[in-house]
Image (cartoon, rainbow, N blue to C red; front, side, top):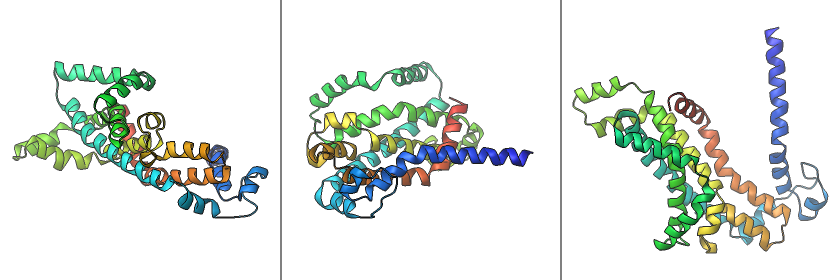
Length: 273
């Protein structure tokens, strides 16, 4: 009876997975359709398979440069969030006092603010700092927006690590910084990895700030480049879907490689927040 129940559970999950994956399957299938077929053929898979759409994307558009810009932005934001979030999360986990209590409250308040309300203040600060139309503008903005959730995830993960480990290292002559780097960071790899992946995916997929803070075509990131590509080319769906599939690949690779770390890191962060 139990095996039969488990079998039906797996069947239902597989069916739901297939249904939820239909838009992605359609996107990939459309990217291999010729231009004429993309307008007339509504099936998931192409009748006539072609790679011309990908050839066009890489040779006739700026999407390759957009992808490079997105990689630079996303990796920089990821590194900044990991470094800053790790030190801040560790401080909130291990130290007590009015300053740390106020900082926790401040982080809560930041997470409750809608990003739309931050647009005008961010834009004013970016212009005053002469960072408008530079990669620094979006890198700083993405890092600032990501940091609160990154800090809370890492704080929750550090809370699960017994302080006795650090006390033993301190008694053996290790300083606080060396203990953190040599002992706490290796143990916290799942939490740090989950924060890195979340930061990377957010920076990779973000559109609104990128479209406002950057105007130069050579600095445009992938999400903005895809929308501009659609407007310039009157939405040729086969070309657009090919560009979208190319843009999905890096994020999918990161998620697949670090999936188990994302789950364990988020669960640890949710247990003790």
